[in-house]
Image (cartoon, rainbow, N blue to C red; front, top):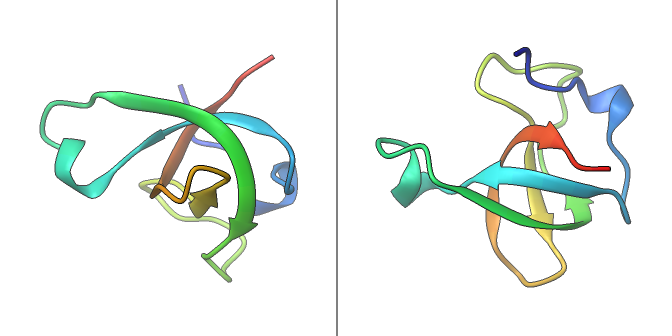
Length: 64
């Protein structure tokens, strides 16, 4: 499964992210995007975002 590009993401969108400390285990954290932190259009490990809860990580999936 490919990680979403920056153009697919926007504040208010529910997503699953992997936080820095969870990269080895692959544990995902679900939340709603507050802001996009990565400026480039794509990143091989996922676009970095900040969630409403304040957690920061790379987007692995968009939730419906």
